[in-house]
Image 1: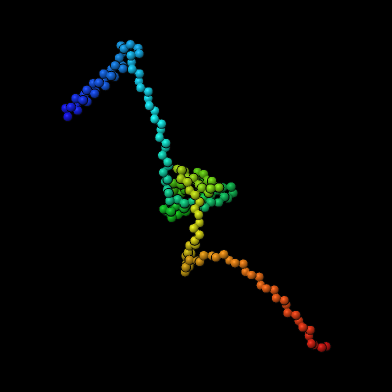
Image 2: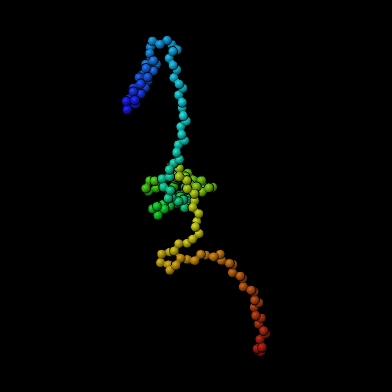
Amino acid sequence: MKLKSVISLFAFILAWEISLADANPFLAPGQKRPLPPAVVKPAPPPPKPIPRNPNLEFRGYYKFEGEWKFAIFDKAKNQGFWLKKDELSDDGSTEIESFDVESEKIVLKGGISLELKESEGRTLPIAGMQSAPKTIQKKLPIPAPARVPAPVKSPSSRTR
């Protein structure tokens, strides 16, 4: 314990003397030690944005009168809604920044990117039905009936 106290006191006195030597106005010019060059570290890259709601799905879109509308489904709330570009959702947590028609991707405010969800190709049962409808098979064309010649009337045997 005493050794640590003595060492820390010695270090303090040494640092104090060095600081006094740097601030001494009686030293001749050029005797002041130059400061070491400052080391500037580059700033670390910013962290990637954390998705606010990864439970969102992009389910569809359409364009009407020059304005795009997008169907967003929230799996956590089991609720879907339609949004225009730069429009906030009802809860204020979702806003669409951009849309790429070719790749069918939207970018939400905050950096979340959503792709159009592919259809699962299944049908859901309708309330009140006994069972789910069967999958619709491709209908084959109905063959045309064969042409049968009309019966020929035989000359009548009636006399006048």
